[in-house]
Amino acid sequence: MTVKLKTNDREEFLNSEKGAELVLALSYISQGLGGLTAFLQESLPTAVHAPPAVGEETTNGRKKRKKKDPEAPKRPMSAYFLYLNDHRDEVSKQMPDAPHKNVVKEIANRWRELTDFDKQVGAGSDAEWSAGGGYPQS
Image (cartoon, rainbow, N blue to C red; front, side, top):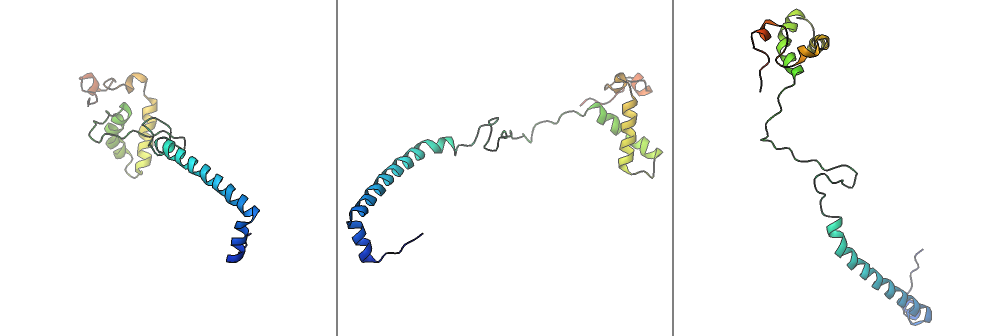
């Protein structure tokens, strides 16, 4: 609730005993806020405004992610992807009207049927493997 006082009423109130108590209380509050402001300015800029280091949690609980080096070499392809690339044309010829999704599903089914030895890069029973070919190493 806001009460508007006329200038004369305001001066009378401030010169009264209650007005003096109010001015004193406000001055104590002001001093307390000034001290609090100084404390916050000294302590918070380093604690709140400093960005978290890599691996430290941020305010939302997630860890800051490390930037990826664009010049870093790529990892070599897994045996599954090498197998997929080698057999894609063959399966596509066997299933000419099938969408790509179904071709990949068929290759995945064939991959599941292979033994662990056949899945290893460079191993298998094909003539290519016997001749020492194998999947290229990158």
